[in-house]
Image 1 (tube, rainbow, N blue to C red):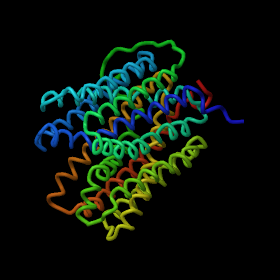
Image 2 (tube, rainbow, N blue to C red; image 1 turned 90 degrees about the vertical axis):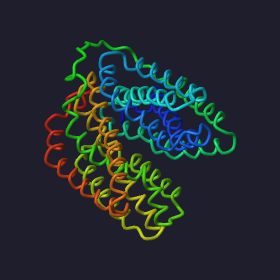
Image 3 (cartoon, helix red, strand yellow; image 1 turned 135 degrees about the horizontal axis):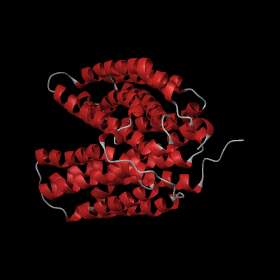
Length: 392
């Protein structure tokens, strides 16, 4: 008989994370429009403002991991979510480049702490034998939020203006906060460690994180530049592409996350790597809208397998009181990979076509596969935590 997965706490934290993602992705396409159209900020300054978020999110991740391992995780989660909600409420009152940059910097810091706290809490809540399934299900909030958020934000901005959009996003985040309170878990005894570099980055998470850094460069190139690529190719179905991409992410997480719990880590990694290695050059060589959509499905399946599988693996490598540092180390690879992907593609786009760039990213996937097979998977097999074999 299976151990219970859908507890009150798990349902609450998964739902709160979905609403967090909804609010977050609602501002991704709408804030640049607001800055340039309503506040009259130049495109160059808008890019500077938007970069403030990424800078602070990357810088805060290691410290977020320390907080999660040395203080009660639920309190860290709720306090950061409370402050994150407050940041949404401040957007209508910020005017000018400096004020907006500082607000985006604060937003990135609070998002970095709050988003880092969810996976360790999920790992604490779910039965050890269903860790992969739990990580996969909670992670569904990302493709769902990525699908709902931009459409919601753009529609509200178009129909009712920026002020109403900010209020709507604030309301969604506030609802996330209310639901988050239901995820309260019993306080546990904690032995606090010194705030030193060795306690900010978890070495056991590094091999898998390095592999995912390379994978996330390819992922970031799709998220940021697929719309530009579609325009260059005169493909009219960019919205359908992202819908197919998100749907494939969703399906792969729903149907394949249980396989991790049955010991199929290697098989899942190989399947995800194979799909992305095929999907990236397919995307780069798409010559009609149908092939463009198929590329979205193939890549969505590949990334949808790799993301929760590798995050579950990271949580399996450490004990309960080390999950904050392990997850933060892992998430830094996400942020850096997407950031490097954006910068790299932006730099190369003036020299070669986006189609060629997408084809070349398959080399990064192959390199990641090599590191997986030679380093990360043997490391995982040697260091898999005993806590996930016998329970907590």
